[in-house]
Length: 66
Image (tube, rainbow, N blue to C red; front, side, top):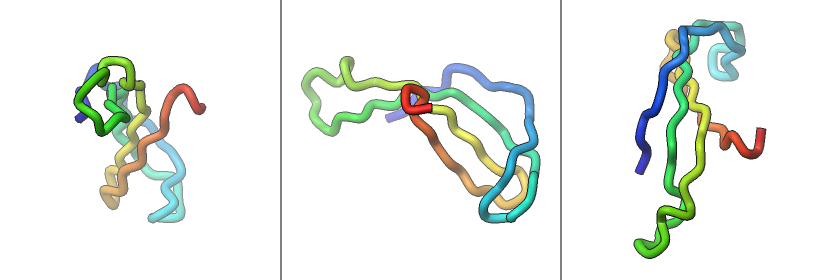
């Protein structure tokens, strides 16, 4: 389950699907990584989520792994 915390201004990034630099919508989401119901508050991590505005391809990268 993800919650949206903030939105950055549209940015241009390389899209692997389009194979060119395209405008992307970039957000930061808190995602729960654990599938177990107990202790889920300890498995929440921030993710940088980008969506290509041209083709709709969405990618998510864990911020702590950046």
